[in-house]
Length: 261
Ligand code: SF4
Ligand code: SF4
Image (cartoon, rainbow, N blue to C red):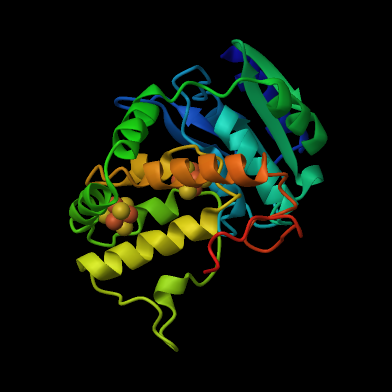
């Protein structure tokens, strides 16, 4: 898309931004491109195949720290950007955000504009995920436990799922804390389950449902289905997450307490 290329080149030339985070052609699908000069921005592409959630790079201090950045944001990246903003991880005035709406480039000037767009826009279809989730939903509790035990027993704790997630920005993750050692560091079925349960719990009400965690897993483990289900349950039980009210750290007096025996 030449329009995005030209905008990025202009911004990089006139000092509006120092870096543009976008996509370039990849072997199978477009891959991330970090352009810090108009010449590098020449490689930018932006089309319906650009679905990876580039918001993950906005909190990388080694890449963006203190710089003004532009970003080509997919639907799910826009959701993550709103959440990162609500969690004080990014500053509105340091980022130029571009989305692709019905094949037309749109620049979002404020986070409120993004929120308004997300309120009205239909999320992209996730047919394969919905089908797998429906299949898992029909299982008995024992079958479901077997399914996830079998899948997660293959995990070798490379943490690619964590690295791909815009909401995993802690400088020290619970899996690396060893005083106390909450989670065993080696890969074994039980500790793999603990790792994923922790990851998913930390995403409650924060996950954009982008699916990048599952897409990043080199073993193809469908770990994004866990967060997909969590996002669905949070919406059903607590309404659409508002960003500011993280379901793990807030409550309403009328919240159900069915988990307390
Ligand atoms: S947990 Fe997975 S689906 Fe949710 S925001 Fe992170 S990468 Fe995306
Ligand atoms: S990306 Fe896959 S193998 Fe790596 S830690 Fe996550 S679930 Fe395990």
